[in-house]
Image (cartoon, rainbow, N blue to C red):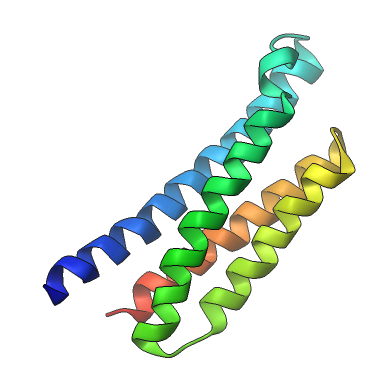
Length: 123
């Protein structure tokens, strides 16, 4: 049973890393397609896409990083992830533009780093 729980936690951390990467890719491609080509603004810049992404990041982050603290006793991954998630939430608040992109990319990089550190602490 313990091995199954560990596998689930590891999968959640990996999912967090993948979601962070997809979010950063969405941000960069959104700037490129909308800013340079004038395409896809109604889909790529839709507020619901960002809100859903933030909710997914919050759910995966809280569960996997929170369980990580319980498992290995180190709070640093949770703290790093919390700062990243706060930056992502701040990006939604500032609206579309350069500030949103910068906050989002820094935020998702921190969330990914938190998940990576959580995985390494677990072993």
